[in-house]
Length: 378
Image (cartoon, rainbow, N blue to C red; front, side, top):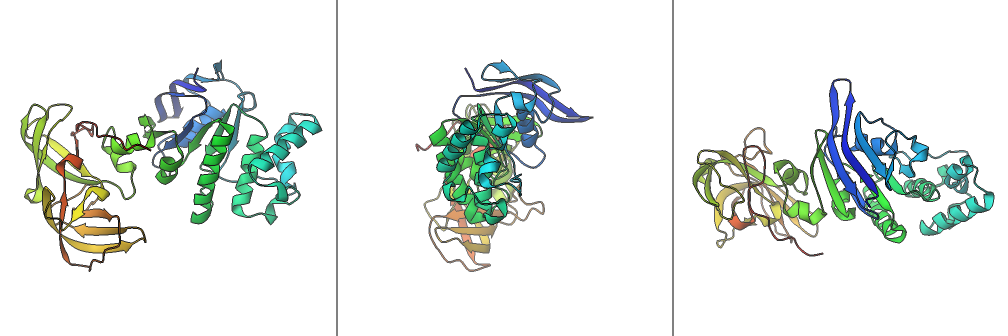
């Protein structure tokens, strides 16, 4: 039996349709991360599960219980917010045990729950301190500890790391993943940060415009995005896109001609393309190669900017007429990711190449029509 079941969930704010036919099963012990751009409905969906937002229509079940119209406190959930929401006049121990005190649990039970949470989160030395005496990461751990003491059926996280600096975010990602492994609890996590999603999730739910675009394991979604939106959203740097037209089509094969004369031949398509159809070719930055004579598809470009990140080099290059959908001005900017440090001078001429088997083809409506690629094993 799934831990959380969402059945045909709809939500309106007046004339605005915030959630559209949401159907999702979350299994016991999963770490599900919901991602998408601002306004896509991910926080609204999380708050709907928590009971902080009402459901327009549909059904919500937690551990088989219909909680659609239940109060938040009766749903068996605990929520950690973006803001720590700690009481400044209370100690760490008092903050962590607050929910149990409100539930009038015995003191011995509260003390035991707080001690257990403090041990899990390495807060034993901080229990007598007030929140102002803690770092940002420690405060967020206290907020998580407050949720742990309630022993909920489901943990809900609403962008809990947004207020932390980069180093603390990385540390807390590791700590939350470790916590999930220790507790084995069902966790639903909302973020706009796809790095958090890719590194923490058992499954990712990609939302856009109030709809679920795709659900799956991180590497499965990255390797085989269902459509152009998912392909562009997951991946940093993002996928490069080039608009073209189908010049030839036969069975599961097609030849696409892009601006500047670039021809890309595809085979093993999952559906037949139509001659004259406008399509989009996509290629991941790490699959592009610079000045490689063995690359099957090649076109000239000029280096615009180079970023040296220690373990890798990111090159931004202009390809003239070969416009990408990521460039409103049609300058044809491509992003190339190189897995070592290589120097490039600004304005220097280069040749960008790739293997057509690594490219994706998207139909006019955005659907991916290239056959699935093998997913790397973890």
